[in-house]
Image (cartoon, rainbow, N blue to C red; front, side, top):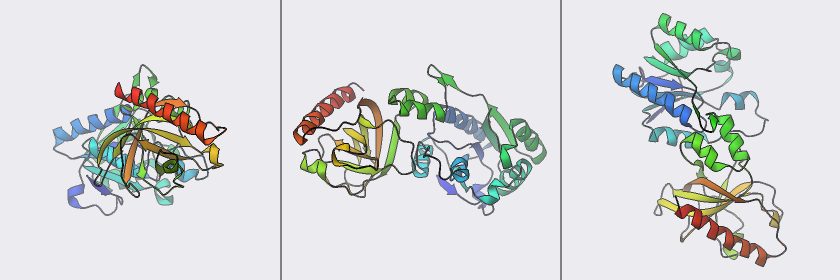
Length: 312
């Protein structure tokens, strides 16, 4: 997958794609449906499959001090999109100049002239241009005028309700990762490098891989049964584990992070990139009267997690 970040400087081989447009936070089933339509259109046009998205997320650009809401980092998003067969990722810089483009300017300068797209696919609620002034009817009209095809995909619903990033965030905030997975089409995953910690887990007999949660929406704090994928290095592969997502109340910490104990594993993972899939919420964070009580609870958590994961 090739990543293009400037619509004004695009190599000839990166022009002419059939793209799905959106933020694709989570790459949920609704996003995947839009991508499949773009793939089918591209096949009929002999055009590569592309995604047109933005970094940072426009919501983050306009309200940088607001609470973190992203379901995944830009890197995790690109990894997920590559797995879906995306060949061109137009990850455009969302800045003052981009936000000032009118709907017509966006269609002309970015879609038609800049990227030379042959076909675009958007959801029925798609809005674009300064102040989100443009809608799908405007995009269809611009496509006819400027020479690119447009498909408007209906919004997707399932047994849990309308598939949306908001609904997924709500499920994660409530400690319902299986409901989130029903909308995502995959387990909600937290990806990133293993960072240094206080090594308290090692001292307690449960060495953990610690990961930062900066910029991400926080699922309900507590202990989870998790699927672990080591993405690189000599230990690359898939494992089971139990993870604590929280602030470590036993030790007076206040910055949330993710600490994962990988079952039946021994090795140095510092700096290695992991992907942690949340499967089931086991219990909230607790403050124990003693380290022995904490160790006893951790053993119970691991037993419970092993049983849950063995049934997958």
